[in-house]
Length: 595
Image (cartoon, rainbow, N blue to C red):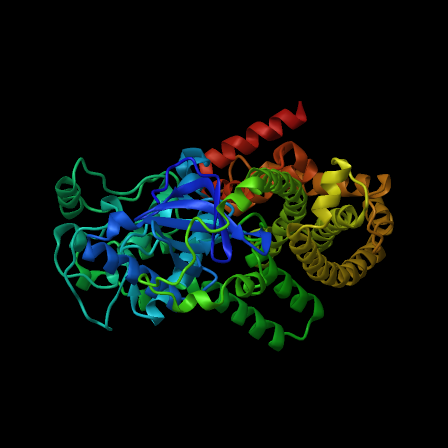
């Protein structure tokens, strides 16, 4: 029986495949599918027509290789293969369904087709984690490109192993030209010997594109592209500004000659990959040797904010290892070969499933719409959380500048300003926490109910709970020290009204009443008055940044004006802003305030 394109659905073993295309892979079309015993467990069904491969030993070999390689891999950062089936007309690969599309589409939605550096690094780290698993099994991918990096639950996953192959350690081989030329290493373009370093090149190119919105080399043909790579040096645009550690790693990944290019092990050991762990280890060491409780708390808080400043789609990833549902989907399929003739045919139970297929597809589409709405609600909650952590970031900036003698203010103002901002942060976090626990909200009641039953809600609630634990711990220590400092200052000058007023809010009451609002704004204004006279002449960029941040603290929602605000880009732009440009912006804002 020859199959046309007008089918609605079909049962293949324990799966139902629906005629809704998700995309095209290296050898076939990818359709939406689900488990027969649970229609909520979605899969991506890769359909490869038998007629396209039956007369090609090379195609059969490549497909077998893809299946065999995927069966060996087990990583959260690689798209999983659940099962393989053959019917008279098609070969089917049932793969993990990635609900958020691919990196290529994600980049298209971003301004300039690029990401902020922290976001690009997050994706890059996910890809590198996937390659740790590939290296363990001596597998090279050969076709890394943004379209083959899938996104699901805040995690990037390597997909489409159609051109992958296994190499012995340190072995090299020749290959025919397969994959996507733009992201190919020079050795593959030229048809010379290659090794696993061909993937180092491709991942380096993808990383570059995430950071700059384009690849460093283009070409009108493969030959032209190869010549451009060979003759034109790697150039990093001056805008946007990127860190030296990122550019250094990319430069080592994009060396023309394989012997000059770094290996995967060198990528794994790079500071960009290991830096967070080393920072954490250093923080733990400092905490252990420090006897002062406030100092310990400051170090802990600084370490926490180092890796948790901005929580968004990427940061708030699934932490359940995705094992439960995967194990239920994937069982006997691991031993399936391409030539397995025992699989059920496409016609079996076909019409039984066609009767309800349209209803199921509609239901799944409705579920996806609901998920998008849930993600919007979650985006707003995380936005409010990120506003709260902006305050924490400002505190860290003030602490570092004060301790390094860049910020020269009195001790009592120093403690009052960081206490006031810290209390504001904790008030905001408590407000977010209360919002999550409440049965009602400003959102549609049914949507809010669905959100509170979602995995996104559970993850976000866990994040907020951790945030509150760390923030409140720091706040309690700061309250003790600030109370002590203010009391000592009042003994020296009992007539100082600002200190008396401040004493009234030195408590652990986390409500933003009119009294706290007034004291908070007065304390910010006091610091600004101390610093604004420095703005026209100072060459200390940190002073200008603190002025800029304090002005935002006065009214954060005028700066962070919508729930999809890019906090990473905000921090990045201020940090990378030239001294004179930052000065000009601040003076303009100060003048507008005084008018």
